[in-house]
Image 1 (tube, rainbow, N blue to C red):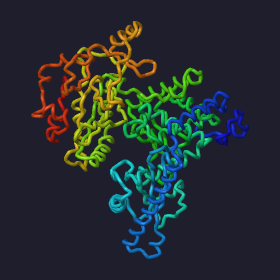
Image 2: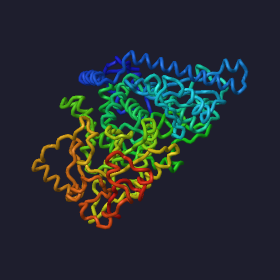
Image 3: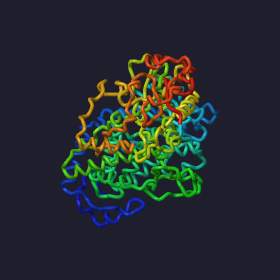
Length: 603
């Protein structure tokens, strides 16, 4: 293997013959002098960007993991005693703590949470022992804050901060009375006689171990992954829950590129990453190894047998049994956004290789609020900070469903771009945060005269599903409204005010704009950041500056909407309630199922 210092462009012949992954490498080439220089510049950039934690913080994380290990051990011993086991069993009883995710892969940064798995004996269960007894133990500890159990998640988890360090704690009960300290979690025997949620809980650690075994050079993999995670966050495409990609997805994509270019250094691998994935023919799956089937009978990803697997847009398959698609949350809309961002990354990397750009250009933040003319604003409010944390977590987990519903109800002609960042309006008296989604007509669609996308019913369905939250409390509310770019609230901008408008277009750009408008399309500039104007009908009517917002995205002006629709109001709900503190009651908020000042022309 090439070590982290091994920069030779001519690796030993026997290494060149080794194959990683399911296909032969694209290239065995090592770095040139220019590649080595670019690697040094990239690594310097990552250090200066603050992506590496200090020795003090690393030491504190180790201490916190040690404390959690002691807490879960005492918890298991307590339960063993209560259930009448012998003194010897009580003495032997224990639980084992494993880290996974970015911490286990060695790519975590300052302030990152620690994904943690607790493996306990067969008689200690998740439903009562973990989510009630251990929860209460943690709730009584001074070091523990922001404790949030999420038992109904796809992978059940308990979230909290321990002495300021964020922890996501999973639990897996395996079919052993005593869990050995040296438990080999990679061995398939840990999956004997366990249920599906336990398999999913165990798989995080098993996948991380397999990834590190399947890459040619772990250090090159780590540097490349650290770089691309940072890039994804800057470009707004890092969020599994929103329908983009999370940590394990990015790790698997990077690992596959490492397999395809086994002797490349990180600067080369970043460039090759964009080169590979701009050309990838989705939904062909990304796999680090062949999918293995085992006699245990757990379902594995197989679109030939499982109809649901055929609907996956961007399959990225985990390498540990049972192999699953880790990116099932990706939708048509979010895949489109990611492919645009891959194109952006590919363009910048080509310029870097030609010495026409620096690494800083690759990490320019995505200007989301300058990229669309129409947005959905989802306001989430609660009585206090603790209620907002739980309510926000639930609503955020459902936002992906809103994207899918809009795709479904508009036959994918209205494209959504959910932005995976929340924004807080500190002027509100109640606890508040807001999410935004960019909206645009699918490029190339022919616009029919008078055609509109009326998504009021879609949003009503979404709000109804969100309000089914089993832990709902008074004060927990959600408001969904359509806003235009010029109506975006100032609190979303870093300095509290909106950016100045870009310079006027040149004659050539105006000509291109005119051509685009005639086709009813929305176009991006070469960098993908600035949009040319839509056809005139999509310009905001002056009336749109009022808090009464409409949701029919149309080539028409709003003044063409029929009077009976415009005059439609929502009972006694006043616009001041929404704009001056979210004081409406739950009953008022659900009048006509649409939210504040909802107007639009029915289809």
